[in-house]
Image 1 (cartoon, rainbow, N blue to C red):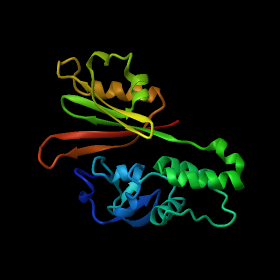
Image 2: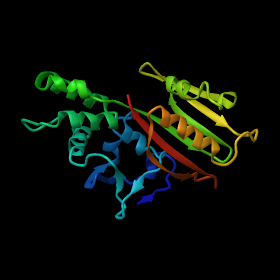
Image 3: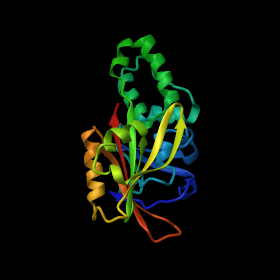
Image 4: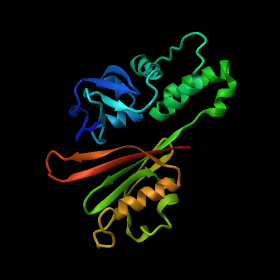
Length: 229
């Protein structure tokens, strides 16, 4: 399985995308996949993240391939269409939670409350953290509370600097930079320690790969992690 080297915005991708979702092949326009700007799919095809491909060059997502058809139909129409007697609402909610499609979650919650009230007990939501590893420093992008939970009292505390903060829908996202410009860390030590700290808090790696800027020879590693919250 190959990892693509991508950088830049959506223009780095073709207008029509071929996806391999858990072994099932789909074709959709880039505009459809990025329709909801705050979704995981929009982030994946933003140009910031490395994406894996299968041997045929299809972008690979390691999720439920059969249920993705309902996700894709929602992206296309903005409507939720489920067959009569659909028995996998809970499983579909888990997939939609992963893709962070809040509008589709709202539709599924209505289905859950009217047809299968017990399903709300099993719903899950995912939190994501992104690491960008450069030769001289590591950047960690995630929720402010999570950053404090993982790193406030860690060995990195003296070297953490806040780059910027953004607030969306009541959630503060903190861009944290952990530097080793003073020579306090060597090689992969910062990355390894950060991954261990996040792993101790329930995060696991979703994707990893390398990116190279078009205007610079510098190569950076990007790692995406998630956990159920």
